[in-house]
Image (cartoon, rainbow, N blue to C red; front, side, top):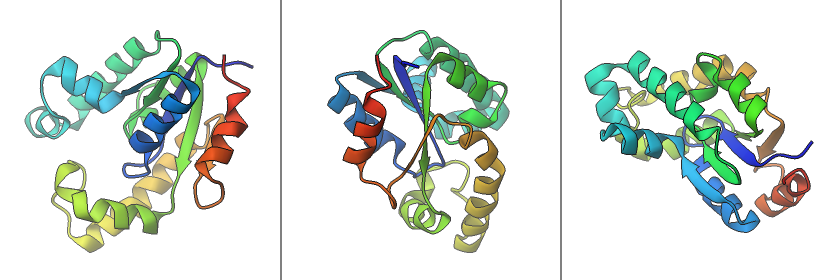
Length: 172
């Protein structure tokens, strides 16, 4: 099967944005970050949307804008950490392109997220131990969605270059 778009999924802090930009550049495709797209379209930051309207409202926006982006071709799209877990978003992703699960251990996620906690609405007001528990529990909860992906990239097991070479022959 050949794909003309790639959706990167995984927990916040797993590296979707950084890897997505690099992947798009290497394969000559365009890149878009779903959260940035939501911010641009709604003219509000994700933390502001969460604060003013709540998570449910944000998830509805996320689904709406994800559907808009599924019509694009030759794109790498970084999804929000919760995107695949709401509505039928993961089914939509799998139907419209290839999905890559950016797999990262809970300990690595904790270390990456701790310094930027204030920018992340779901963990901004948590103590360190609450955040650690949240990451463990939320990752377990979301794993069933993430693991439906066509590909898994675990950068503790494989280099970015090797992974890009591995998926390259599935791309249009």
